[in-house]
View 1 (tube, rainbow, N blue to C red):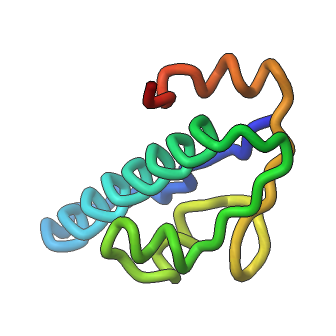
View 2: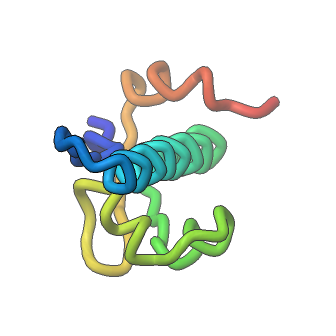
View 3: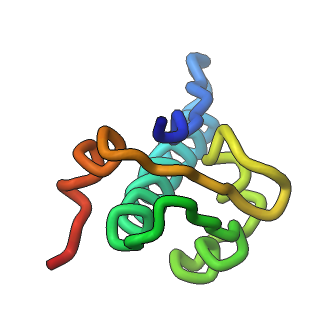
Length: 96
């Protein structure tokens, strides 16, 4: 089963600066999730390990921002075990 990402918190207050900051964090979390799904879709292995530092480097964000966006995994990365159903869900992320 695919990890439930991205993990985002929504700010519901009225302060414009906090609204902008939250919007940037949400956009970043979705960008991180898309990148991780692309990595998973294009890796032929059933069991995969993706390190948060590598994802951060790829996207020019901090490792902490990647950790915040990925709701499952350990401190340094995430291990996924993909089955056929997962592969079908990831099909749109495949690069041929």
